[in-house]
Image (cartoon, rainbow, N blue to C red; front, side, top):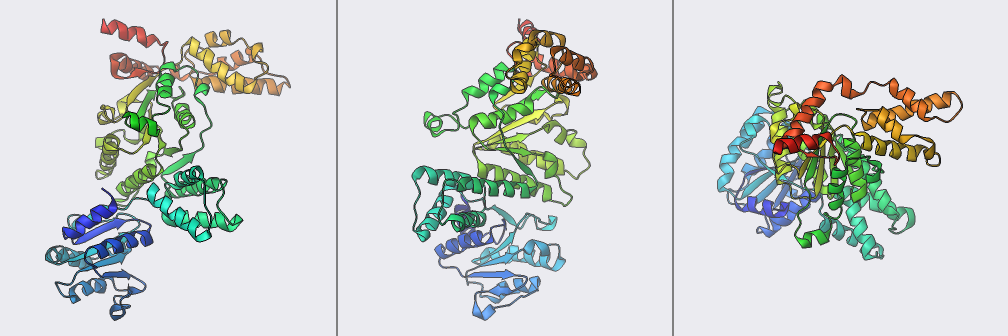
Length: 504
């Protein structure tokens, strides 16, 4: 249900106290004004702390610097007089005992009157004693149709036009920005060269990156890695390649739903993060990285508000990839954290969204410790597939060496005995192979020559792979995967034989 439809329904149902969390005061007030007009031309009264009530000459300045007095205007009007009161930044005063009591009185009084009080705030911050009387209404960022209408209005005012393709590209690039930011960045582009040009899409994307950084929750990650940069993991790569066009309109017409996401489980350094970046590059989608730790804040209710903000931004940028690295660390020991249930509420909001989302946000979550993952997140329906990413076998180590050496020494790759390197580095992860090559380069550079196969082997002899230091953890992961709880990312994997034996 859209905001306008929901707000219209709440007005008709006489919900007395509404709470809207948004930074877009101008846009939400315009939407409220339009719906109030449609509901029999209801008068709008707008109050803020500095100027009091504005617009109506009889009440101009009433309640200035007095939030309790601002509520008294509601009682001054005739009980049968319809009205909508918009109180800006009113969340700052909800802790006041007099204001809280007044609002709770209004929750009963206004049920029989055609009046609604709308509290506007940039974030949700509701005291416990007002939870039951305030109804929170979501106000989403501008949708594609709204953005397109605004750009066409701007073009009409400048007397210019755009090709259909450029207009679609510009609309897509603006998704995830507030309407005010869209107007600002497009005005900047027009001021620069008198019209909108294809190069301005990059200007919009730069503004989008700035916006995402300001959330302090999500990071915009440039993805240049390719599927071919992943050595081994053939089952996983085949799975991803088959879904390359799954976000297209052609896939919708075919009847395919949007892919939901992927959970990659395995030890560190086996290519899970690289896979997330490669997916974004191959599918030509923006990559957002979520640091779950940033969701948690000190103020009561702010963590839940940040979670909703994260979901809103991700959905506004859809289609996109949402990468959640080491999700096991974020929600480990869920029931034992002494945080008054904040972690449980954040986790509940997150997994509910995972299961019910309809927007094309493809979630790629990675985990190293299966024991720390809450069992709810492994249930079918949260992700399309769960893959176990194990240590590369010899054939895969050979592929990993080829990927790195092709990048580092494309013209001299024949000088390296890749077969020997793969054989001599058992239990090495992809990250450890890369570190081995870097160490070998240091050896060659310090002696003013190119590095050799022997340098690589010498470097490998000085590295103790994680497979030896975390042997118990890795064995538990292998046993978990061998029980058939996850799909194997590699075609050639020792676990395949073990699983086949268990099935027989």
